[in-house]
Length: 86
Picture 1 (spheres, rainbow, N blue to C red):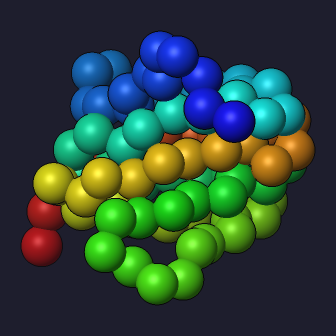
Picture 2 (picture 1 turned 90 degrees about the vertical axis):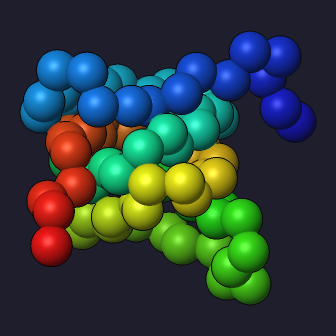
């Protein structure tokens, strides 16, 4: 079930911690690093066959231009930061 207005996570003020209630959705916008503090994220990326499940202590990097759907599979606290440039 999709929320009518899915918020987009983008690089505004870094890093930032966000709380996502269980079942909430967000879209990745821009080059981001997501680090799960508590809970679990379920990430679906456009063009990828496999979904990602990110557990506490783990992080995932999303590339600029990725169309990613991020769901809090459990109530989660996530640190969002800009992805380091290569």
